[in-house]
Length: 371
Image 1 (spheres, rainbow, N blue to C red):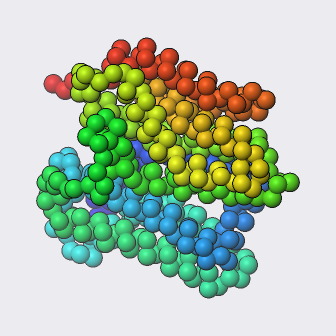
Image 2: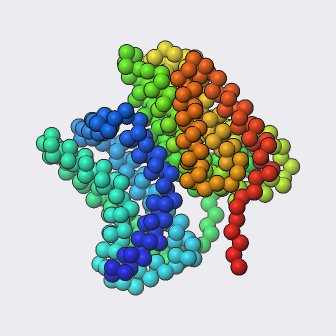
Image 3: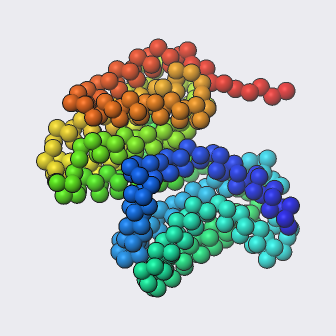
């Protein structure tokens, strides 16, 4: 059984963390990198854990985030099982149910490690503050999420290779059969769990800060949180770019103006940022800074468009892309501190247009030739 667990870990667990390294890096930075000191970061999380234990709404929010992460794992496993290279995993069905359950339990513990660690830290806070009932609820939630993952994985395995069959489903709402519709459908079909996680984190971080008391509100901190949440979309943008350059590459040879593709991407990222735009309403309604709200709303989609256009400059891996974006984040972070930060949307649109219109047709995705 030990050898089987090692094979599962190398073929499923390790690829899962490698594939989502960018997302985990963003989450780590969002959770610990924004605070000025480590002590402030731990104090903030202690307060958040206290809210989870004492507030029903925050407890429900934590469960939703943990559930989305679990669904993200299930989607990854389903995607693996749809590939013929993973047919060997179906051999687990030949084992007794108890052995199969124990193997999947070990893998589930590794895959659910981020949720488990934060949950155990929350339980530690509950023990310190003698919140016994809340402690039981958090522990029960962690156990149920592990069972949910294991049982659904067993169901996928029991389905056998039928999961590899192509099934055509009708969309819940019609989208135009053009570049705009195909890309938007691809985002919500292939990256739904990633979108939900990023949207929840960025929405609540922006909403909570923009609705605090005016004496505590600081524009520079708001721009720091906003730019960080936008950089957090980089993992989603990178996968969206690869989807366009692999599944929709034929659009390059179609009679569609380059400017149409450019503005299609702009409107796609505008739609993607609608939750953040709604969360930022507090800048205008609570803090009475309507012009600041306008610059934030205009900067969002143009900044994401710039992050997308940068990928056309040269073929790069996710690690190289993240290094580049760190430099972009530093530059825009300091620009947001100046009195000229209202120029940020113009800077983004000009640079993204310059890169896109000069590099779009010259870009060639690196491919590996087998044989």
